[in-house]
Structures are given as C-alpha cells and as structure tokens.
Amino acid sequence: MNQKNYQKELDNIIQKLQGRVPRLFLHSCCAPCSSYVLEYLCPFFDITVFYYNPNISASAEYKKRVEEQKRLIAAYNAEGKGHPIKIVEGDYEPERFYEAVNGYEQCGEGSERCFRCFDLRLRETARRAKEQGFDYFGTTLTISPLKNAAKLNEIGLELSWEFKMPWLPSDFKKKNGYKRSVELSVQYELYRQDFCGCSFSKAERMSQERTCVKA
Image (tube, rainbow, N blue to C red; front, side, top):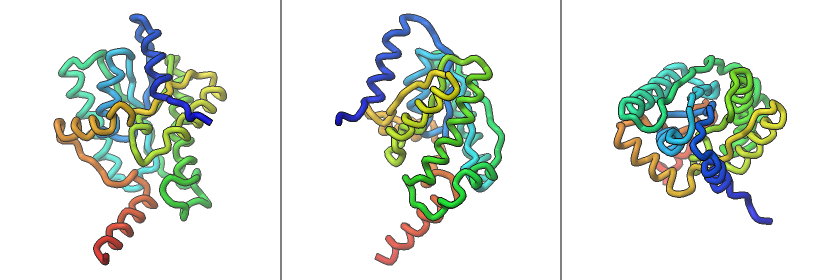
C-alpha cells in the first residue's frame, strides 16, 4: 500500500489558492520547528500561531520556549516575510497532559503516549480554530524526524471530521525542511531543546546520555 504524501497534498492546496489568503490557525511546538514552517507558509496564509503545549512539564522551560517563539515571530514580521504573523498563547495546564497520558507513562518515545499528547494539543487547536472562524488548522510537529507525520495527519483528519474544520496536511521534514529549520535556528540564534518537553522524554534522554557515557 502506497503511503500518502502529505507534503504533496499541501503543495496542491497552495497551488489552488490563486491569490486567496486563507486564515490558518497553526499549532506550534517551539520556535526552531516553526522557523521553516512559517517561512514556507506565510507567503500564502494569514497565520495565527497557537502556542499550546501542556506537555512541557517545567514552567521555566515552558516560559523559555514561548518567549523564543514570540521573538522569532517578531523578527519575521520586522523583515516582512510574507503576511504578518500573529500569536496566541494557550493556557499552560500540564495537568491536562498527565490526565491524557495516564496509564501510558512508561511507554517510550513515539508510542501511544505521544499519540495521546498529539490528540490533546491538536484537539484544542481545532476547537479554537472552529470557534474563531479560521479556514484551516494545522501543526508544525510534522517537521521533526522524531514525530510520526502519518499519525499526526491521521489525528488531524479525525479532528477535522469531528469539528467540521479543514485540516492542513503536511510533512514539513520533506524538501529538506528539517535541514532548513536547523539553518534558521542558527541564523536567529534560537534555543534548541533536546527533548520534546515532557518529564518522560527528558528522563529517557538523560538515560540515553548516561548509557553513552558508560559505553
């Protein structure tokens, strides 16, 4: 069975816009991941970034990441990169993350634990996009080589049907998207974290580092 090319689906949507500028409510996990995504999309969409990441366990880490997101958007707007980008910061409610992954805490990175986290964040994105009359909702998460783009699009499409809200398909790591995000992170001196944000992924990262040191 051929795997869907979600990035090609996105390119087809863009080609059919023919000068129209739809309003996009775009969930973002962090500034580095959003860097290429915003550069790529802002010539075609009126973007409002939705920073909603209750999976980030430490409040200091959360604040650091959201400030970097705001700094990057301000820089892009000052440079006139496409249509002006807006940002909405969601509530910081880590208790919702722990409730969503209850019983799956010991599952590894890329497991059902992560899928439940994706659903939590994208569900809130879809809900707000519907309430505020956006044309699409989407996420920057598909740019990461560590995130399952097929699963993210599957969840997005399910929520699209549930909320009657168009989902913007993507696989931003394609076309050297991830490589470009690394270049932009260096250019704008962005803080790049080495774990997704939750306490479980941080513990896994630390465990891997200890194993490497012993080896």
